Amino acid sequence: MRILVAEDDAVLAEGLRCSLREAGYAVNCVRTGAEADSATASSEFDLLILDLGLPKMGGLEVLRRLRARQSRLPVLILTAMDGVNDRVRGLDLGADDYLAKPFALAELEARVRALARRGQTGSPVLRHGTLSYDTVGKVARIEGEMVELSARELALLEILLQRPGCMVSKEHLVDSVCEWGEEVSTNAIEVYIHRLRKKLDRGGVKIVTIRGLGYCLERPQTH
Image 1: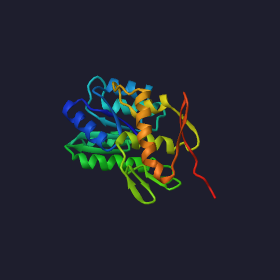
Image 2: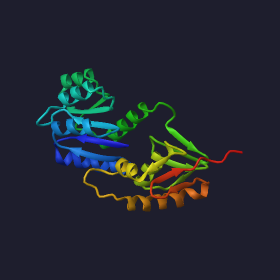
Image 3: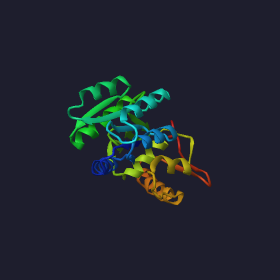
Image 4: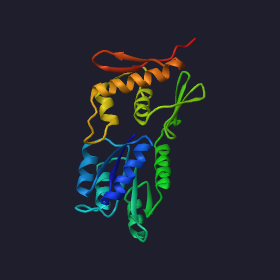
């Protein structure tokens, strides 16, 4: 899951980035409304955390332009404690939720999880043979026993589980799990896949390498 954080307070933005990365999300940050508008128009994200008091273009205008493009990107707006009118306008313009500053990081993470659940068209738990993966709680289990995976391994697993039996290119995996300015090569993806494959092997979950192209999660055998 890729999250864009539009926040001009550098300390707060870094706190959000670190907290969300530890929770298993890929996070990109921008400092101005113009950057947020450009990013959402040109890149794919799963959630926008939008401060309304942005320079160069206010958060409400960013939101208005986003919805004018018919984007259904979930938006969590951040406002000042006394910004009731701004919160109302934001919700009227199509925001999905809001938080008033100051807020606890734990509450923000809970709201992110709630928005992720709201965006699910079916069950948030993906199943593949003996493997189950909770896309909201970011927990993988084999035969009910938790599998210890890193945040990057979890992100790769989720992408493969969404396309069982289908080839996923290395380039797509890089684009889906990396953040702006982060140097993640296809060779690094090979290392993460190797580690993930070893951890899933005991449950009979097979990741097949399609040489020169990418990877495929082998469909479980049916009897």
